[in-house]
Length: 71
Image (tube, rainbow, N blue to C red):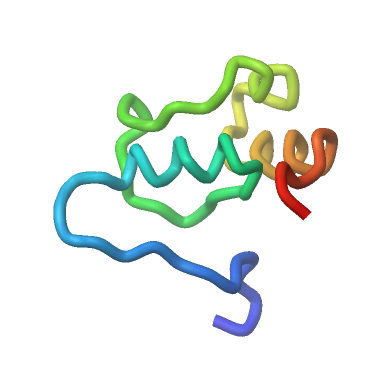
């Protein structure tokens, strides 16, 4: 666990994982290590410019390019 990329988590009851990942994308927080099916995950279309074949890597590259939404 010392080498995990994130130092935060989101845990809830119910099937809202796709919505949490969409919220993270909007807030420009990269997401990895989730168990949500790909068809339920929304990412902005601009993320495809950063690597559509590797969605988790695209999260990191897009967040690095655009920077955090809130500082």
